[in-house]
Image (cartoon, rainbow, N blue to C red; front, side, top):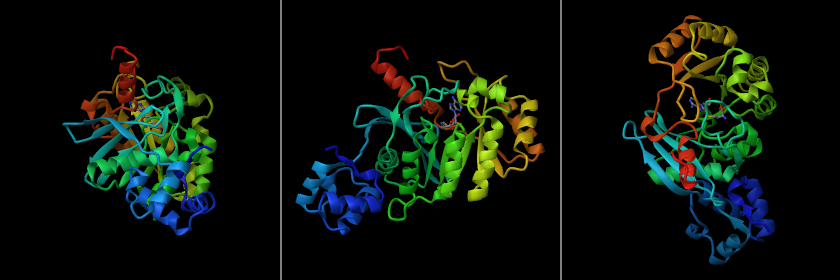
Length: 351
Ligand code: SAH
């Protein structure tokens, strides 16, 4: 029998598992849940208020998803930490800790690799290996909290992978990480970024979570967007914006739009005006990201003056805009870069 992934279970599912599979009393589920999600135990053997016999049963019937740290790079500029974690099957993923005045924010991966194929992104260069389980995503956060000994207050699902392409596990992750019986990170401090999978955005809206939805827009018309993001061949900008309006109706949560600026590609003042026009009337926030150049891709970063002009123009037309502060520049913090250089190294490629 396959061992159960108990760290991905809700408390209700865990109660069923504990009583029906292990033949134990129901309250054991609460103890187990607390060990996993509050005390962040790294093994069954740490769970000292469970009897040896029960721990033995757990070893036989279940496993605890725990990531091992393969590398950790610390930025000397801003203290950003980039972790490379090894999964139990040998795959590696990356997660990033950013220290802000408001607290500790962790950026997690939702898949090993990605199959969305965005032209400027390093995560997708080798395609998708597999989805992450909810427990593996949780342990990205838990491992970092354990490592730094400080509470993680915010999580952004903006690392490698397309979260809505791993809908069920990501939804499970969101519910577990915000559960008041677990780490209890407020849903308002959770952000999920998507390249725009319309049916999944609609489904998520119906869940009525209080998380922030971030949409990777990056272009103001479908033709240009299709050049940057293959997913734009499946869904138009108009369809995405309709889904966003629905999301807002259902949740009353302001939407974030991410717009990565590439020199000469999408950063003209005409683009800024078109973007303002497109988002008019939508309760939203625009996050401008000067594109992070990736070796295998031929996009260049917009110069700081163009980025500022773009922001000014958007504001003139009523947009609510911030420029994303670049963090961890010295430690390959752009999506997928560290993992890529690590796996390429293993394969003996020049990096
Ligand atoms: N799959 C999700 C999460 C991706 S990463 C999504 O598409 O939203 C988070 C953000 O970083 C996305 O907006 C993504 O388009 C952007 N991004 C990826 N590579 C980048 C790069 N090299 N420079 C700037 N932004 C990048």
